[in-house]
Image (cartoon, rainbow over the protein chains, first blue to last red):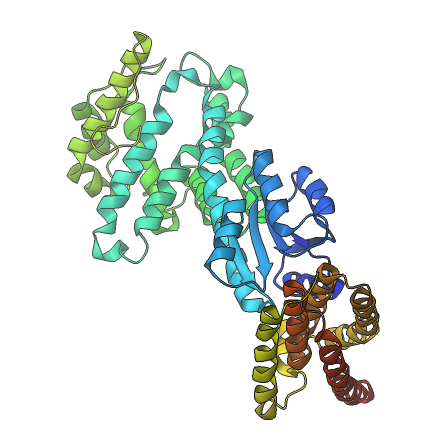
Length: 352
Length: 141
């Protein structure tokens, strides 16, 4: 990640730069506030470490000017200061600083504060970006309605159930559930690479067309893998990538693209597989009507027996009333939107 | 800015505290802290010390000029800068005296600053001697 150092003292700037390079950051140094504001306008910097006391534009004034600009991306500002006392803290925070580091800086303290800043920045942007990208991919296939909204709710339900089971307790915690809720809408992002004549075909696909359609798992994987390489610390990208690649794999090895078996399929892929199939069965598609919950359940438990992780199937059965509620809630929403009286409401603890 | 007798008391107290502390704080420059701040890179430590030695006399000269011009605000700003440099290089004695001068500049109490600059120069000589021995050791290794 890029860090902008704003420091008029060349010795201090050099020491900061040396430490941050050692920690693996890309570093740019501005020697005064004006230079820093110019660089920030480029949009390249979201993490800024600035001295408080500087000639012309002080660190505090620079904070005020950054906040007044209301940039599209949040700029996280750490002020370096030898100042102590509540009054200075209040002044710094009021001006828009996010954190403080005492001068002279201690490298390890600086690192943990930068990491805290990175966490804030990633939280700010990731949810919006993920869902927007997923929606963009879905927009080419208008038949699916609120598919993404339902999918993430189903995945969360299954995750919540698994988190209660001893064998999953170490893996499926609150963070995992939050991540699968965030990333599950990305499962079909690779469909942006599927030609319209295949993706939008109003009928059954030929074997050749189906081969093309199956490519969406690999396209999604490659896209997200490139993102993982750019930002390897972002765990949500890893999960999004795994989901994109494996959500059509089947527990008995009959899936695609790699015909993986059982635990070779990442858990997130196993969870999504069932959620995706349930949603496809219970919603209307150009090639089939919407099946009832009962019929969908029979297909999953009987006709597709062996294709899903038994633990995930158990979660589905345990939580089937909540599956029905989610399905009906989003059907109601769709009807309301069609009749022009859409409303946003919170039901059954779901964020919609 | 004109000095007042009350505003000068603060600096005198600080000075007394520092003098008392100096008896047991014989360390001229906390080398370990400096090395840590330089991420263990000894070549970089040497470069920092050399830069420090190049710059500090110039900063001190500027400070004396500001004092001669009775520019309390500039005195404060320059002393602040020197303090920051001394702090980063872990020269605690220099840092402390620079802090005193900054406080005096802030309160407009300039009359006592020449004495503090003298103390600063003395401490600076100690730092120079100490640094010379460290630098000669590291360059001969």
